[in-house]
Image (cartoon, rainbow, N blue to C red):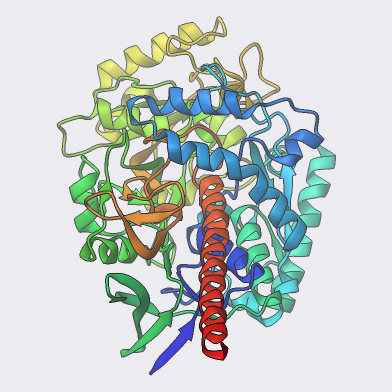
Length: 581
Protein backbone atom coordinates (compact mmCIF):
# COMPACT_ATOMS: atom_id res chain seq x y z
CA UNK A 1 0.00 0.00 0.00
CA UNK A 2 1.30 3.47 -0.92
CA UNK A 3 -0.12 6.79 0.25
CA UNK A 4 0.90 10.25 -0.94
CA UNK A 5 1.38 13.50 1.00
CA UNK A 6 3.33 16.68 0.40
CA UNK A 7 5.41 16.27 3.56
CA UNK A 8 6.01 13.53 6.11
CA UNK A 9 7.05 14.42 9.66
CA UNK A 10 8.65 11.70 11.80
CA UNK A 11 7.99 12.42 15.48
CA UNK A 12 5.36 14.29 17.49
CA UNK A 13 7.33 16.41 19.95
CA UNK A 14 7.38 20.19 19.72
CA UNK A 15 9.77 20.20 16.76
CA UNK A 16 7.71 17.78 14.69
CA UNK A 17 4.36 19.32 15.54
CA UNK A 18 5.67 22.84 14.89
CA UNK A 19 6.90 21.71 11.48
CA UNK A 20 3.63 20.03 10.58
CA UNK A 21 1.48 22.95 11.73
CA UNK A 22 3.56 25.51 9.85
CA UNK A 23 3.66 23.47 6.65
CA UNK A 24 -0.09 22.85 6.92
CA UNK A 25 -0.75 26.53 7.49
CA UNK A 26 1.06 27.34 4.25
CA UNK A 27 -0.98 24.85 2.27
CA UNK A 28 0.86 21.53 2.32
CA UNK A 29 -0.72 18.17 3.05
CA UNK A 30 1.20 16.70 5.98
CA UNK A 31 1.29 13.36 7.76
CA UNK A 32 2.72 12.99 11.30
CA UNK A 33 4.14 9.58 12.19
CA UNK A 34 4.78 8.70 15.85
CA UNK A 35 6.48 5.52 17.02
CA UNK A 36 4.97 5.60 20.53
CA UNK A 37 1.28 5.02 21.22
CA UNK A 38 0.87 8.61 22.46
CA UNK A 39 1.54 12.10 21.13
CA UNK A 40 3.99 14.58 22.64
CA UNK A 41 7.46 13.05 22.66
CA UNK A 42 10.02 14.48 25.05
CA UNK A 43 8.11 17.78 25.09
CA UNK A 44 5.20 16.28 27.01
CA UNK A 45 7.55 15.21 29.82
CA UNK A 46 9.54 18.44 29.94
CA UNK A 47 9.40 21.71 31.84
CA UNK A 48 8.08 23.36 28.69
CA UNK A 49 10.30 26.47 28.72
CA UNK A 50 11.51 27.99 25.44
CA UNK A 51 14.68 30.08 25.15
CA UNK A 52 13.85 32.56 22.38
CA UNK A 53 15.71 35.89 22.22
CA UNK A 54 13.79 38.71 20.57
CA UNK A 55 10.30 37.47 21.44
CA UNK A 56 7.29 39.79 21.53
CA UNK A 57 6.39 38.98 25.14
CA UNK A 58 9.67 40.50 26.30
CA UNK A 59 9.06 43.54 24.11
CA UNK A 60 5.54 43.96 25.54
CA UNK A 61 7.03 43.77 29.04
CA UNK A 62 9.44 46.58 28.20
CA UNK A 63 12.55 44.41 28.28
CA UNK A 64 15.28 45.83 26.07
CA UNK A 65 17.25 42.85 24.75
CA UNK A 66 19.03 43.04 21.42
CA UNK A 67 19.71 40.08 19.15
CA UNK A 68 23.31 41.25 19.00
CA UNK A 69 23.62 40.74 22.76
CA UNK A 70 22.07 37.28 22.46
CA UNK A 71 24.54 36.39 19.70
CA UNK A 72 27.44 37.55 21.89
CA UNK A 73 26.12 35.39 24.72
CA UNK A 74 25.74 32.28 22.53
CA UNK A 75 29.20 32.78 21.02
CA UNK A 76 30.69 33.02 24.52
CA UNK A 77 28.82 29.91 25.67
CA UNK A 78 29.71 27.83 22.60
CA UNK A 79 33.34 28.92 22.42
CA UNK A 80 35.25 27.12 19.64
CA UNK A 81 32.09 25.17 18.72
CA UNK A 82 30.15 28.29 17.67
CA UNK A 83 28.16 27.82 14.43
CA UNK A 84 27.48 31.37 13.26
CA UNK A 85 25.24 30.57 10.29
CA UNK A 86 22.83 28.36 12.23
CA UNK A 87 22.82 30.67 15.23
CA UNK A 88 22.03 33.66 13.01
CA UNK A 89 19.19 31.68 11.43
CA UNK A 90 17.83 30.83 14.88
CA UNK A 91 18.00 34.44 16.07
CA UNK A 92 16.38 35.72 12.87
CA UNK A 93 13.37 33.41 13.22
CA UNK A 94 12.89 32.78 16.96
CA UNK A 95 10.79 35.86 17.65
CA UNK A 96 8.91 35.39 14.39
CA UNK A 97 8.07 31.83 15.44
CA UNK A 98 6.58 32.95 18.76
CA UNK A 99 4.41 35.55 17.02
CA UNK A 100 3.23 33.02 14.41
CA UNK A 101 2.12 30.43 16.96
CA UNK A 102 0.43 32.96 19.20
CA UNK A 103 -1.47 34.42 16.26
CA UNK A 104 -2.43 31.32 14.30
CA UNK A 105 -2.63 28.40 16.75
CA UNK A 106 -3.83 27.33 20.20
CA UNK A 107 -0.30 27.88 21.53
CA UNK A 108 0.30 30.76 23.93
CA UNK A 109 2.96 31.66 26.46
CA UNK A 110 3.64 33.54 29.67
CA UNK A 111 6.60 35.88 29.93
CA UNK A 112 9.39 34.57 32.15
CA UNK A 113 9.35 37.58 34.44
CA UNK A 114 12.68 37.99 36.24
CA UNK A 115 13.87 34.63 34.88
CA UNK A 116 17.56 35.07 33.98
CA UNK A 117 19.82 33.19 31.60
CA UNK A 118 21.80 30.39 33.20
CA UNK A 119 24.96 32.52 33.08
CA UNK A 120 23.57 36.06 33.39
CA UNK A 121 26.98 37.40 34.42
CA UNK A 122 28.65 36.23 31.19
CA UNK A 123 29.09 38.56 28.18
CA UNK A 124 25.70 39.14 26.57
CA UNK A 125 23.83 37.39 29.39
CA UNK A 126 20.36 38.67 30.29
CA UNK A 127 18.52 39.00 33.58
CA UNK A 128 15.19 38.25 31.91
CA UNK A 129 13.36 38.21 28.60
CA UNK A 130 14.68 35.20 26.70
CA UNK A 131 12.82 32.39 28.47
CA UNK A 132 9.05 32.01 28.06
CA UNK A 133 6.67 29.39 29.38
CA UNK A 134 3.47 27.80 27.99
CA UNK A 135 0.23 28.90 29.57
CA UNK A 136 -1.67 26.14 31.41
CA UNK A 137 -4.18 24.30 29.24
CA UNK A 138 -7.50 22.60 29.98
CA UNK A 139 -6.98 19.06 28.78
CA UNK A 140 -10.75 18.59 28.47
CA UNK A 141 -10.50 20.73 25.32
CA UNK A 142 -8.81 17.78 23.62
CA UNK A 143 -11.97 15.74 24.02
CA UNK A 144 -11.45 12.03 23.46
CA UNK A 145 -7.98 12.76 22.10
CA UNK A 146 -6.84 13.51 25.68
CA UNK A 147 -6.16 9.79 26.07
CA UNK A 148 -3.65 10.06 23.20
CA UNK A 149 -1.55 12.75 24.90
CA UNK A 150 1.51 11.48 26.75
CA UNK A 151 1.36 11.95 30.50
CA UNK A 152 4.10 13.64 32.53
CA UNK A 153 6.40 11.41 34.55
CA UNK A 154 4.77 10.60 37.93
CA UNK A 155 7.88 11.77 39.79
CA UNK A 156 7.48 15.28 38.36
CA UNK A 157 3.91 15.56 39.66
CA UNK A 158 2.12 15.69 43.00
CA UNK A 159 -0.45 12.86 43.12
CA UNK A 160 -0.44 12.93 39.32
CA UNK A 161 -1.03 16.69 39.26
CA UNK A 162 1.45 18.83 37.36
CA UNK A 163 3.03 21.70 39.28
CA UNK A 164 3.57 24.88 37.32
CA UNK A 165 6.82 26.75 37.81
CA UNK A 166 6.65 29.92 39.88
CA UNK A 167 3.76 30.77 42.24
CA UNK A 168 2.15 27.30 42.12
CA UNK A 169 5.31 25.57 43.31
CA UNK A 170 5.90 28.18 46.00
CA UNK A 171 2.39 27.64 47.37
CA UNK A 172 3.01 23.90 47.61
CA UNK A 173 6.31 24.44 49.45
CA UNK A 174 4.63 26.89 51.84
CA UNK A 175 1.46 24.86 52.45
CA UNK A 176 2.36 24.14 56.08
CA UNK A 177 3.41 27.72 56.85
CA UNK A 178 0.71 29.81 55.19
CA UNK A 179 -3.08 29.56 55.37
CA UNK A 180 -3.30 31.17 51.93
CA UNK A 181 -0.95 28.60 50.46
CA UNK A 182 -2.75 25.76 52.24
CA UNK A 183 -6.09 26.91 50.80
CA UNK A 184 -4.52 27.17 47.32
CA UNK A 185 -3.13 23.64 47.54
CA UNK A 186 -6.38 22.13 48.83
CA UNK A 187 -8.30 23.79 46.01
CA UNK A 188 -5.92 22.43 43.38
CA UNK A 189 -6.13 18.92 44.87
CA UNK A 190 -9.93 19.03 44.87
CA UNK A 191 -10.03 20.16 41.23
CA UNK A 192 -7.54 17.46 40.31
CA UNK A 193 -9.54 14.68 41.97
CA UNK A 194 -12.72 15.84 40.22
CA UNK A 195 -10.91 15.76 36.86
CA UNK A 196 -9.74 12.20 37.48
CA UNK A 197 -13.29 11.09 38.25
CA UNK A 198 -14.63 12.77 35.10
CA UNK A 199 -11.81 12.31 32.57
CA UNK A 200 -9.57 9.56 33.96
CA UNK A 201 -6.67 11.96 34.49
CA UNK A 202 -5.97 15.51 35.63
CA UNK A 203 -7.00 18.09 33.04
CA UNK A 204 -5.14 21.17 34.28
CA UNK A 205 -2.09 20.67 32.11
CA UNK A 206 1.07 22.68 32.77
CA UNK A 207 4.69 22.89 31.65
CA UNK A 208 5.66 20.73 28.67
CA UNK A 209 2.43 18.78 28.88
CA UNK A 210 0.53 22.02 28.27
CA UNK A 211 2.74 22.91 25.31
CA UNK A 212 2.28 19.47 23.74
CA UNK A 213 -1.48 19.69 24.35
CA UNK A 214 -1.73 23.12 22.73
CA UNK A 215 0.20 21.92 19.69
CA UNK A 216 -1.91 18.75 19.54
CA UNK A 217 -5.12 20.80 19.77
CA UNK A 218 -3.92 22.81 16.78
CA UNK A 219 -3.19 19.62 14.81
CA UNK A 220 -6.74 18.47 15.52
CA UNK A 221 -8.20 21.86 14.57
CA UNK A 222 -6.29 21.84 11.27
CA UNK A 223 -7.29 18.22 10.65
CA UNK A 224 -3.68 17.22 10.06
CA UNK A 225 -3.58 13.40 9.92
CA UNK A 226 -1.36 11.58 12.41
CA UNK A 227 -0.60 7.96 13.18
CA UNK A 228 0.69 6.58 16.47
CA UNK A 229 2.31 3.16 17.08
CA UNK A 230 3.92 3.56 13.66
CA UNK A 231 7.67 3.18 13.42
CA UNK A 232 9.54 4.59 10.43
CA UNK A 233 12.18 2.04 9.46
CA UNK A 234 13.65 3.46 6.26
CA UNK A 235 13.66 6.34 3.80
CA UNK A 236 12.56 6.02 0.18
CA UNK A 237 14.87 7.67 -2.37
CA UNK A 238 14.56 8.17 -6.10
CA UNK A 239 17.43 9.67 -8.09
CA UNK A 240 19.14 10.60 -4.79
CA UNK A 241 16.07 12.57 -3.64
CA UNK A 242 14.12 11.52 -0.53
CA UNK A 243 10.52 10.94 -1.59
CA UNK A 244 9.01 9.03 1.33
CA UNK A 245 9.37 6.50 4.12
CA UNK A 246 8.82 2.84 4.88
CA UNK A 247 6.87 2.24 8.09
CA UNK A 248 6.21 -0.74 10.29
CA UNK A 249 2.74 -0.72 11.85
CA UNK A 250 1.71 -3.85 13.74
CA UNK A 251 4.26 -5.91 11.85
CA UNK A 252 3.17 -4.79 8.40
CA UNK A 253 5.40 -2.75 6.08
CA UNK A 254 4.01 0.18 4.13
CA UNK A 255 5.45 2.84 1.80
CA UNK A 256 4.25 6.39 2.36
CA UNK A 257 5.38 9.00 -0.13
CA UNK A 258 6.10 12.64 0.65
CA UNK A 259 6.38 14.59 -2.59
CA UNK A 260 8.30 17.46 -1.03
CA UNK A 261 10.28 15.56 1.55
CA UNK A 262 10.66 13.98 4.98
CA UNK A 263 11.42 15.76 8.24
CA UNK A 264 13.25 13.80 10.95
CA UNK A 265 12.05 14.92 14.39
CA UNK A 266 12.28 11.63 16.28
CA UNK A 267 13.96 12.98 19.43
CA UNK A 268 17.58 11.98 19.01
CA UNK A 269 19.11 8.83 20.50
CA UNK A 270 19.00 9.14 24.34
CA UNK A 271 17.69 5.57 24.67
CA UNK A 272 20.07 3.97 22.16
CA UNK A 273 22.80 2.09 24.04
CA UNK A 274 25.13 1.73 21.06
CA UNK A 275 25.08 5.39 20.04
CA UNK A 276 25.37 6.61 23.63
CA UNK A 277 28.39 4.40 24.21
CA UNK A 278 29.95 5.85 21.06
CA UNK A 279 29.33 9.54 21.76
CA UNK A 280 28.83 10.15 25.49
CA UNK A 281 32.33 9.51 26.80
CA UNK A 282 31.32 8.08 30.18
CA UNK A 283 29.67 4.78 31.21
CA UNK A 284 26.07 4.80 29.98
CA UNK A 285 24.58 1.51 31.14
CA UNK A 286 21.29 1.67 33.06
CA UNK A 287 22.96 1.84 36.48
CA UNK A 288 25.45 4.50 35.34
CA UNK A 289 23.37 6.92 33.25
CA UNK A 290 19.63 7.64 33.21
CA UNK A 291 17.89 9.57 30.45
CA UNK A 292 14.69 11.48 31.20
CA UNK A 293 13.58 11.18 27.56
CA UNK A 294 10.85 8.75 26.46
CA UNK A 295 11.95 5.16 26.07
CA UNK A 296 10.83 5.28 22.41
CA UNK A 297 13.63 7.73 21.56
CA UNK A 298 16.05 5.10 20.33
CA UNK A 299 17.66 7.04 17.51
CA UNK A 300 15.51 5.93 14.59
CA UNK A 301 15.92 9.25 12.80
CA UNK A 302 19.65 9.37 13.45
CA UNK A 303 20.22 5.79 12.33
CA UNK A 304 18.22 6.24 9.12
CA UNK A 305 20.07 9.45 8.29
CA UNK A 306 23.44 7.74 8.81
CA UNK A 307 22.42 4.83 6.60
CA UNK A 308 21.59 7.30 3.82
CA UNK A 309 24.91 9.11 3.98
CA UNK A 310 24.18 11.90 6.46
CA UNK A 311 26.96 13.46 8.50
CA UNK A 312 26.81 13.44 12.30
CA UNK A 313 27.99 16.58 14.06
CA UNK A 314 29.88 15.63 17.21
CA UNK A 315 31.98 18.80 17.37
CA UNK A 316 30.41 19.83 20.67
CA UNK A 317 31.64 20.40 24.21
CA UNK A 318 28.91 18.09 25.56
CA UNK A 319 27.14 15.23 23.82
CA UNK A 320 23.76 15.85 25.46
CA UNK A 321 21.75 18.26 27.56
CA UNK A 322 22.85 16.86 30.92
CA UNK A 323 20.62 16.49 33.97
CA UNK A 324 21.23 15.01 37.45
CA UNK A 325 18.86 12.09 38.02
CA UNK A 326 18.07 9.70 40.84
CA UNK A 327 16.38 6.31 40.43
CA UNK A 328 13.29 5.49 42.48
CA UNK A 329 11.84 2.10 43.29
CA UNK A 330 8.08 2.46 43.00
CA UNK A 331 5.69 0.45 45.20
CA UNK A 332 4.66 -1.69 42.19
CA UNK A 333 8.27 -2.74 41.60
CA UNK A 334 8.89 -0.50 38.59
CA UNK A 335 11.50 2.25 38.60
CA UNK A 336 11.01 5.98 38.26
CA UNK A 337 13.32 8.83 37.30
CA UNK A 338 13.62 12.06 39.29
CA UNK A 339 15.15 15.22 37.85
CA UNK A 340 17.07 17.20 40.51
CA UNK A 341 16.12 20.67 39.34
CA UNK A 342 15.67 22.92 42.36
CA UNK A 343 16.64 20.96 45.49
CA UNK A 344 20.36 21.48 44.81
CA UNK A 345 20.06 25.26 45.27
CA UNK A 346 18.39 25.17 48.67
CA UNK A 347 20.29 26.24 51.82
CA UNK A 348 21.81 23.37 53.74
CA UNK A 349 22.03 21.08 50.69
CA UNK A 350 25.39 19.95 49.30
CA UNK A 351 26.72 17.35 46.87
CA UNK A 352 29.83 15.17 47.24
CA UNK A 353 31.52 12.32 45.40
CA UNK A 354 32.40 9.05 47.13
CA UNK A 355 35.64 10.78 48.16
CA UNK A 356 33.57 13.00 50.44
CA UNK A 357 34.55 16.14 48.53
CA UNK A 358 32.35 18.77 46.93
CA UNK A 359 32.99 19.12 43.20
CA UNK A 360 30.71 21.96 42.09
CA UNK A 361 28.60 24.90 43.14
CA UNK A 362 25.37 22.97 43.74
CA UNK A 363 23.12 25.85 42.66
CA UNK A 364 24.58 26.00 39.15
CA UNK A 365 22.31 24.87 36.34
CA UNK A 366 21.68 21.16 35.86
CA UNK A 367 23.73 20.88 32.66
CA UNK A 368 26.86 22.38 34.24
CA UNK A 369 26.30 20.33 37.41
CA UNK A 370 26.55 17.06 35.48
CA UNK A 371 29.47 18.29 33.37
CA UNK A 372 31.34 18.93 36.62
CA UNK A 373 30.33 15.50 37.96
CA UNK A 374 31.61 13.74 34.84
CA UNK A 375 34.89 15.63 35.07
CA UNK A 376 35.24 14.89 38.80
CA UNK A 377 34.77 11.16 38.19
CA UNK A 378 36.93 10.97 35.06
CA UNK A 379 38.39 7.50 34.65
CA UNK A 380 36.03 5.85 37.12
CA UNK A 381 33.42 3.25 36.27
CA UNK A 382 30.96 4.77 38.75
CA UNK A 383 30.10 8.36 37.84
CA UNK A 384 27.91 9.33 40.75
CA UNK A 385 27.48 11.70 43.66
CA UNK A 386 25.31 12.10 46.74
CA UNK A 387 22.96 14.99 47.44
CA UNK A 388 22.69 15.44 51.18
CA UNK A 389 21.09 17.61 53.83
CA UNK A 390 20.04 17.65 57.49
CA UNK A 391 16.62 16.97 58.99
CA UNK A 392 15.56 20.61 58.95
CA UNK A 393 16.23 21.00 55.23
CA UNK A 394 14.60 17.66 54.41
CA UNK A 395 11.32 18.63 56.07
CA UNK A 396 11.42 22.20 54.76
CA UNK A 397 12.41 21.58 51.13
CA UNK A 398 12.44 17.85 50.53
CA UNK A 399 15.33 16.08 48.80
CA UNK A 400 14.96 14.54 45.36
CA UNK A 401 11.66 12.65 45.18
CA UNK A 402 11.15 13.05 48.94
CA UNK A 403 8.53 15.75 49.48
CA UNK A 404 8.67 18.31 52.29
CA UNK A 405 6.52 18.20 55.42
CA UNK A 406 3.77 17.20 56.08
CA UNK A 407 4.25 14.38 53.58
CA UNK A 408 6.03 11.33 54.89
CA UNK A 409 9.55 10.21 54.05
CA UNK A 410 10.09 6.87 55.82
CA UNK A 411 8.90 4.79 52.87
CA UNK A 412 11.85 6.22 50.92
CA UNK A 413 14.20 5.01 53.65
CA UNK A 414 12.66 1.55 53.53
CA UNK A 415 13.04 1.38 49.74
CA UNK A 416 16.72 2.40 49.97
CA UNK A 417 16.22 5.63 48.00
CA UNK A 418 16.84 7.88 51.01
CA UNK A 419 19.92 7.08 53.10
CA UNK A 420 20.04 8.18 56.76
CA UNK A 421 22.59 8.48 59.53
CA UNK A 422 22.30 9.97 63.00
CA UNK A 423 25.70 11.58 62.46
CA UNK A 424 27.63 12.69 59.39
CA UNK A 425 30.02 9.79 59.93
CA UNK A 426 27.17 7.25 60.04
CA UNK A 427 25.66 8.72 56.88
CA UNK A 428 29.02 8.45 55.14
CA UNK A 429 29.40 4.78 56.06
CA UNK A 430 25.81 4.07 54.96
CA UNK A 431 26.45 5.67 51.54
CA UNK A 432 29.96 4.30 51.03
CA UNK A 433 31.58 7.75 51.30
CA UNK A 434 34.96 8.30 52.99
CA UNK A 435 33.85 9.33 56.51
CA UNK A 436 36.79 11.53 57.54
CA UNK A 437 36.77 13.56 54.35
CA UNK A 438 33.01 14.05 54.46
CA UNK A 439 33.15 15.28 58.05
CA UNK A 440 35.87 17.76 57.07
CA UNK A 441 33.88 18.90 54.02
CA UNK A 442 30.73 19.47 56.08
CA UNK A 443 32.73 21.37 58.72
CA UNK A 444 34.14 23.75 56.08
CA UNK A 445 30.73 24.10 54.45
CA UNK A 446 29.11 25.02 57.77
CA UNK A 447 31.85 27.47 58.76
CA UNK A 448 31.33 29.38 55.52
CA UNK A 449 27.53 29.15 55.78
CA UNK A 450 27.55 30.81 59.21
CA UNK A 451 28.95 33.87 57.45
CA UNK A 452 26.49 33.61 54.54
CA UNK A 453 29.13 32.70 51.98
CA UNK A 454 30.29 29.62 50.11
CA UNK A 455 33.75 28.66 48.89
CA UNK A 456 32.38 27.39 45.56
CA UNK A 457 30.11 30.38 45.00
CA UNK A 458 26.73 28.85 45.76
CA UNK A 459 24.06 31.51 45.27
CA UNK A 460 26.43 33.86 43.45
CA UNK A 461 24.17 34.74 40.49
CA UNK A 462 20.57 35.86 40.07
CA UNK A 463 19.66 32.53 38.45
CA UNK A 464 21.03 30.55 41.37
CA UNK A 465 19.32 32.75 43.96
CA UNK A 466 16.01 32.38 42.12
CA UNK A 467 16.02 28.66 42.96
CA UNK A 468 17.00 29.16 46.60
CA UNK A 469 14.79 30.12 49.55
CA UNK A 470 13.94 33.82 49.30
CA UNK A 471 13.10 33.85 53.02
CA UNK A 472 16.60 32.68 53.95
CA UNK A 473 19.16 35.43 54.53
CA UNK A 474 21.71 36.67 53.75
CA UNK A 475 22.16 34.12 50.93
CA UNK A 476 19.04 32.19 49.84
CA UNK A 477 21.20 29.25 48.75
CA UNK A 478 23.56 28.98 51.71
CA UNK A 479 22.78 27.41 55.09
CA UNK A 480 24.38 24.97 57.53
CA UNK A 481 23.96 21.19 57.48
CA UNK A 482 24.03 20.64 61.24
CA UNK A 483 20.78 19.25 62.71
CA UNK A 484 20.76 15.45 62.62
CA UNK A 485 19.72 12.99 61.52
CA UNK A 486 21.33 13.49 58.11
CA UNK A 487 20.13 12.25 54.73
CA UNK A 488 21.50 11.50 51.27
CA UNK A 489 20.23 10.49 47.83
CA UNK A 490 22.42 8.86 45.19
CA UNK A 491 22.51 10.91 41.98
CA UNK A 492 23.63 9.73 38.54
CA UNK A 493 24.41 11.61 35.34
CA UNK A 494 21.40 11.78 33.04
CA UNK A 495 20.13 13.76 30.12
CA UNK A 496 17.12 15.63 28.78
CA UNK A 497 18.02 14.67 25.21
CA UNK A 498 20.99 14.42 22.87
CA UNK A 499 23.12 17.31 21.57
CA UNK A 500 25.18 15.27 19.13
CA UNK A 501 23.02 14.84 16.07
CA UNK A 502 22.48 15.03 12.35
CA UNK A 503 24.42 17.85 10.73
CA UNK A 504 22.09 20.39 9.12
CA UNK A 505 22.47 23.76 7.46
CA UNK A 506 20.80 27.01 8.46
CA UNK A 507 17.64 25.96 6.60
CA UNK A 508 17.34 22.57 8.42
CA UNK A 509 18.47 20.57 5.37
CA UNK A 510 20.37 17.38 6.24
CA UNK A 511 23.99 17.43 5.05
CA UNK A 512 25.83 14.44 3.67
CA UNK A 513 29.40 13.44 4.53
CA UNK A 514 30.68 15.96 1.95
CA UNK A 515 28.68 18.82 3.48
CA UNK A 516 26.09 18.91 0.70
CA UNK A 517 22.30 18.86 1.31
CA UNK A 518 20.52 15.55 0.76
CA UNK A 519 17.57 16.61 -1.41
CA UNK A 520 14.22 16.70 0.41
CA UNK A 521 15.58 15.48 3.76
CA UNK A 522 15.35 17.71 6.84
CA UNK A 523 16.06 17.33 10.56
CA UNK A 524 14.82 19.38 13.51
CA UNK A 525 14.68 19.11 17.29
CA UNK A 526 17.04 16.69 19.00
CA UNK A 527 17.55 14.73 15.79
CA UNK A 528 19.67 17.68 14.61
CA UNK A 529 22.86 18.75 16.34
CA UNK A 530 22.53 21.46 19.00
CA UNK A 531 23.15 25.02 17.80
CA UNK A 532 24.76 25.93 21.13
CA UNK A 533 27.93 23.91 20.66
CA UNK A 534 27.26 21.70 23.68
CA UNK A 535 26.42 24.56 26.07
CA UNK A 536 23.10 25.25 27.78
CA UNK A 537 22.42 29.01 27.75
CA UNK A 538 19.10 29.19 29.57
CA UNK A 539 15.73 27.64 30.40
CA UNK A 540 14.32 26.21 27.18
CA UNK A 541 17.59 25.74 25.31
CA UNK A 542 16.23 22.62 23.58
CA UNK A 543 12.59 23.59 22.98
CA UNK A 544 13.35 27.13 21.78
CA UNK A 545 15.47 25.97 18.82
CA UNK A 546 13.19 22.94 18.31
CA UNK A 547 10.12 25.04 17.63
CA UNK A 548 12.04 27.76 15.82
CA UNK A 549 13.66 25.39 13.35
CA UNK A 550 10.42 23.40 13.07
CA UNK A 551 8.67 26.61 12.07
CA UNK A 552 11.47 27.52 9.67
CA UNK A 553 11.49 24.03 8.15
CA UNK A 554 7.74 24.02 7.55
CA UNK A 555 7.89 27.45 5.95
CA UNK A 556 10.92 26.61 3.80
CA UNK A 557 9.41 23.38 2.46
CA UNK A 558 6.15 25.18 1.65
CA UNK A 559 8.07 27.92 -0.13
CA UNK A 560 10.08 25.39 -2.14
CA UNK A 561 6.90 23.51 -3.04
CA UNK A 562 5.28 26.72 -4.18
CA UNK A 563 8.30 27.61 -6.32
CA UNK A 564 8.34 24.13 -7.82
CA UNK A 565 4.64 24.33 -8.57
CA UNK A 566 5.10 27.76 -10.12
CA UNK A 567 7.95 26.52 -12.28
CA UNK A 568 5.88 23.53 -13.39
CA UNK A 569 2.92 25.76 -14.19
CA UNK A 570 5.16 28.10 -16.18
CA UNK A 571 6.61 25.21 -18.16
CA UNK A 572 3.11 23.90 -18.84
CA UNK A 573 1.94 27.34 -19.95
CA UNK A 574 4.93 27.76 -22.29
CA UNK A 575 4.35 24.29 -23.70
CA UNK A 576 0.68 25.07 -24.19
CA UNK A 577 1.44 28.40 -25.89
CA UNK A 578 3.98 26.70 -28.19
CA UNK A 579 1.53 23.97 -29.10
CA UNK A 580 -1.26 26.48 -29.70
CA UNK A 581 0.97 28.60 -31.94
